[in-house]
Structure formats: structure tokens, C-alpha cells
Length: 199
Length: 96
Image 1 (cartoon, each protein chain N blue to C red):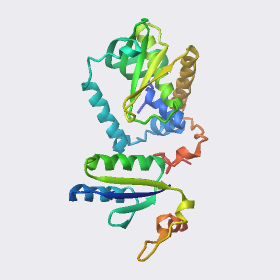
Image 2 (cartoon, each protein chain N blue to C red; image 1 turned 30 degrees about the vertical axis):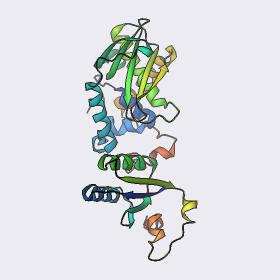
Image 3 (cartoon, rainbow over the protein chains, first blue to last red; image 1 turned 135 degrees about the horizontal axis):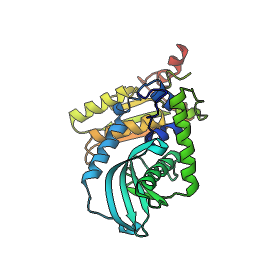
Image 4 (tube, chains in turn green, purple; image 1 turned 90 degrees about the vertical axis):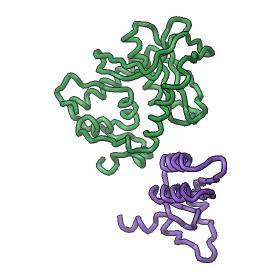
């Protein structure tokens, strides 16, 4: 558990997804150190299995329709400047020389792109930009429960700025121990693992 | 949301496992192969995935029907039926 004064706090894109679901996740996880116990959830376990299978299968396959010329798998990167670290499922090099992160989701495509998924891709893009020094203009999401549907996502410059602001907000909660407001969406509380201790 | 889980599973072992999975999900057995109870959207999705991992999709059949309370109020029960109040959570709320 990171200490409040510590400067070594680092944030993963998954934590940003949780922050966007409800800012209090960060408080319960990073400040109080109460685990989500997500590994006990069936969907999480299944999702991890799908990830493992994806690592083994189709390693040589290049998504030529998307203009991919090179693929790297499970790339672990960090950007100390933004206190960000994470593992990108696939780093794709596109024909125009730019890079694109690809993230597998154990989810169904419901005809709309969730802000959290989008922001996760932007953060992976930020990691790529920092480490490879190449432009990142798009990313891809693969919905494994919708016949591996690939959804391209455009990433604009101001998306990176928004992501950096969110990282700063998360860092602030982790460092100061400030209890943020819960999400205004009450429906999210129904399925939240912290609902019993959230006042 | 009130959800019916109705199944027809050929082999004994997966059938028993599916019944136990439904019970663990917190829904009630209203007949041998029929369960009913209140689940949220994520719980319905998770239960569906769990059942899918247990059954043989070539031979078995499982139906998961979410149903709104308005429609449930129109359900007619004949003979030795179950207690509707128990299924809709109405009794549990009295203790809160």
C-alpha cells in the first residue's frame, strides 16, 4: 500500500477505469488499502483466461485491414513523469509510422463506447508516446464476447490532456487521503463491492 | 430485476452444478428445473456465464428470462405454487 507522503505512487490504467466508475474506489483501494477482491469474481477470472489464450493464439497474425505492420505483445511500460505504469496487451505499429495500443475486453459490444474504456486506451497511448517517442492517433478495443469485434478509437491531443488531469486527481486522493464525492450515478452503487462500507 | 432460470440438462452432474450455482446466486427454486429471483444486470450476466461454462451447449437448454415487476404481477399461479412475496424480496425489506 502506498504511503500518503510517498512520491512513488503509481497509477495503472485499470485504476483510472475504476476512478471513472466512482472516485471513491481510489479512496478505498489506495488510501484505506481495502482490496476489491476482484479475483474472486467469476467474470474477472474468465476475462484473465481469455487474455492468456489470446497471448498464445494467432501470434503471427497481422491485422492488415487496420494497416498494421508490426505487433508487440504484453508490453510493460511506465511514465514516471505522470506517475503512470501499465501493461499494453498489444502495441501495433501502423503503416504511417504511428503507434496504436490494442486492448482486449472480456465484454460485449453494446453499440456505445464507454468513457472508461476510451480513457484506458488514451492512457496506453500516453505510455506509448512517452516511451517510443512516436505519434499515437488511434487505438483499438477487441470485444471478446462479441466475436472479437474490433472497434477503432480516435485519440486526439486534448484526450491526452484530459487523461493527465484525471491522473492528477487520482494522485491527489492517494496522497492526501481526501474522501472524494461518490459517483452521481446511483445505479452503479447496486453492484459496487464497497457498497456496504460507503457512507 | 426478477429473473427466471429454466433448464433442461441431460447429464446429472452439470444439472446439479447448475442448480447449486443458481442457489448460490441467491435465487429461489420454484420447481425442479426452474429458479426465480431478483438479480441486477451484472448478476444476470455473471450467472449466464457460469451456467454456460457448466453445460454442454450441443445437448442442454437453459433459458434466462429477465422480467419486470409489472409483468410479474400478472403471473397466475395454480395448484401448489410458490410464495410470490418471497421471490420479489417484499418480505426481506420488512427486516431492514
